[in-house]
Image (tube, rainbow, N blue to C red; front, side, top):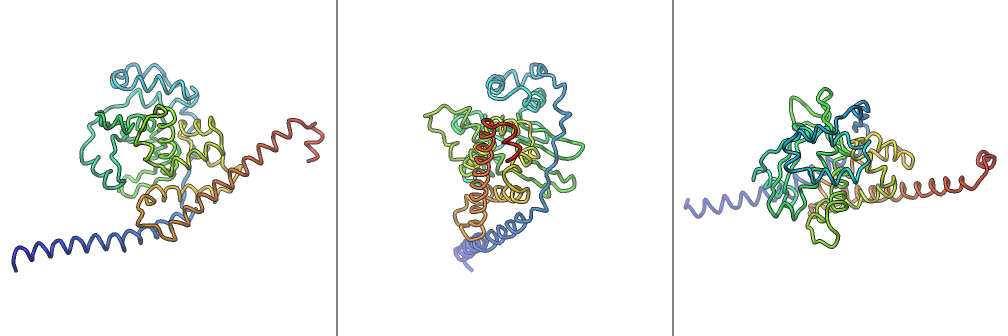
Length: 319
């Protein structure tokens, strides 16, 4: 067998493996994921410990040289965007946050997984942040995105839960691959939505607008349903449980959990245009219908409350 024949065999084998992954393994994995995520019994949502919002020292961040050197500008903005009672996670994390180098391997991994260049990452478990601080990162606005994660996270080491914005991760000490996470789609959508809303100048061409595009649309819809200030409060307090309770005014808990699950699926798989088949389309359809129904119920509830303002207690009681 000649060297050319060996090379051709290896190339053929490589093409064959890629084809199997593309047409068999990946679609099968998605179908299994959708089947798993359609079961709302598996969802875990834990109340955020309210006692953590007590006696947080605001001035402690001034003792952190990393904060004073790099993130003070972010802090000046965030305190004008978010109410003080929702900023304890921010003050707690930025008092001890550390920097670490962003490896090329991490960047390459995200390029291959998501098809976009990632300029940073936040490690909630260690409260460390890795940023590519060159012009590309600033263009992508990764800095604000990762700092928003840091400002909305609490790691409960005792329970093994990471509360991050509107997501929760349940850590598996024996096998990190078995970590369970819920709400990541909504959380990433809101994080990028807030990045664009508060940290990108209007009229500026930013490719960050293309990141988590579908999730940002969902985030904006949720803000319309729940209200701007309430959504922001729940996000920065890392209160997924409160988010579920808020939505329960307009939808059943089972549908809310299914919506959370399918938004996670959407984030993981929807970018792959080759996976445009019936199961994935059903997940998208459920998300759309859920948002429309919740919005209509929210509008109806607000109209009813508005009517009450013009009625006597006697008429209200009769209705």
